Amino acid sequence: MRTVPMIWAVLALSGCAVGPVFTPPEMALPDRYARLEPVSRASAADLQWWQHFNDPLLTRLVDGAVAGNLDLAQAQARLREAAAIARRDGNQLSGDADLTTTRVSNGGAEDSSLGLTARIGLAGESRWRAKAAAQRLEAAQFDTQAARRALLAELGIAYVDLRFAQASLVARGQDLTSRQQTLRDINRLLDAGAATQLDVLRAQALVTETQAQMPALSASVMRQRNRISTLLGQPVGTLPVDLGYPGAQPDPVMRTAAGVPADLLRARPDIRQAERLYAAALSDLGVAEAARYPSLSLRGIISAPVGGGENTQSLVAGLSLPLFNQPALAASVDAADARVSQAYLRWQRAVLGAVEEVENAQANLQASVAALSEAQRLVDLNRRALGLSRDLLSNRGTITVLDVLDRERALSEARALRARSQRDRAVDYIILQTVMGQGHESGAN
Image (cartoon, rainbow, N blue to C red):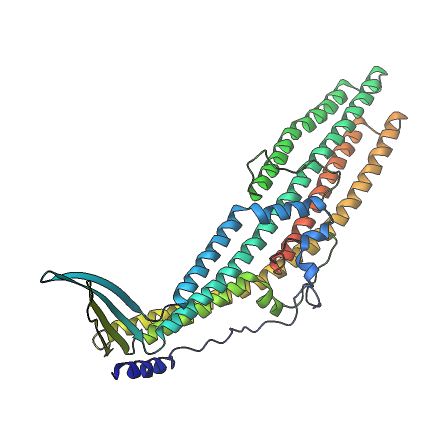
């Protein structure tokens, strides 16, 4: 039978696949960021930005989020799906295959037959399909890394916002204590004839204003607690850690190894994902182009009497020529080529967006660092001014009660500005580390 040698010859020809050649996409990028000098590439320790806060509780929350977050679990499920598809497409020999069994009665005797129908693309169609599935599997791996990076950024910001709300609540409590003391001092002056009832009313209004601010801050604390619970995949109210206020807001050790823009091409998982999807689109183009070429058709049957006897078998091979559907196949190639262009443009957009995010994050961090320094100075100045105002008021100096109340309000506003600036600095630091591609390694520690 000469069919088998012919089959092997045709299979050998199928190794000569047609289609596009993938080369990693490139983009001309500057050799430095606009706001920072280029520095060395981030180390492995830098990838774990949450460690820069020296906060064991934050590290525990990171571990819990990696283990229990539902969005991350969905990304991991998509990864398993892509792995299964890659296994399926990688093990496919042909574009179409069908195996049938029949059992027929022949004059009182029964015959059983096994039939095979298969089509093998000679231009490497199955190979291109397997490559596309493998590339989408790699894209799914980067999608999982991107999901982890986004999760940890959201968790870190929620933790910073929790501490900010708690610090603001504590500060309002301090303001309330101070303003109540001022009210008592003014009442004593009223008894001594050195203050008016209007002064007392103004002081009481300031106390009431402070009390009115505290319920909203308490609700903000609760919202951030709930957000952290959800990010950890825990029902609200069952978080197995103590989120009580430790007395300070998160304060990162400032390490900003920004590198150069070209580093983002390898560091950002979303860019790597876009690159792999571009490669998969090219492989899809290869599938479409290969479909325009002839394919090998195999048809075989094995028959055997059920009660025993001589088996019969046959195998027929032939070529299928897609002659009449070439216009449709050509349109499929054009559509696949357009999808390649779209994938490449998405990759370019991802790169440009990443560079923009890093530039903006650096600008925001520098601004918040400077703002925190000035806010701390403003608190110190207003604290001294309030102390001097109280001394003058107690000693019947040249100052009014209204001046003291104004200093009270100014100090409270300065403290709030400092807390907000400290929150902004921590958040901007997390954002910068995230947009530089850090925080997506497989280990949590």
